[in-house]
Image (cartoon, rainbow, N blue to C red; front, side, top):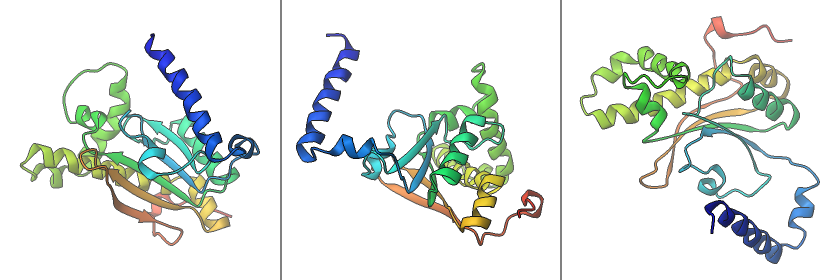
Length: 210
């Protein structure tokens, strides 16, 4: 059997499982979505957002890219963020990275990977911002893990620096921003940082919000 056909068979089994538990499951989903959370995670296949958080369809609005980045020129991410915050009115935005992240690992190297060099450059910038802290970590694995964490923290700050989030903080008092890291070795999520409407931003990043 072709490997992709296994996915189609698995889909049918999943449908039957859902209908057995709740006959109106898909009818209910078809009426719309009201997720409480926006998840910005890594595209890594080992980090399925719904599975590791125990959430069901309709509970997470998900955006994934290489190394869970919040880049201010990425209109894909910005469109997801604006829709989640302004239309869906999510209460929480979660940036979740993970240890052993290939994007972060390659950003630590000098490999020439072609187009993705442009994307990983943002992680190299995170390294530069925190170079003093990272250079004193002698163990390469610990240094790698710390850069994963610092990258998450910087991406949460990038969220707070958007006019989208600042306008919503002014108008709605939400969302709360969270920075998490997932440990592939244990399956556990670690909280790193939280920011809300009372967060004091660096002045240069504040917008005049009316």
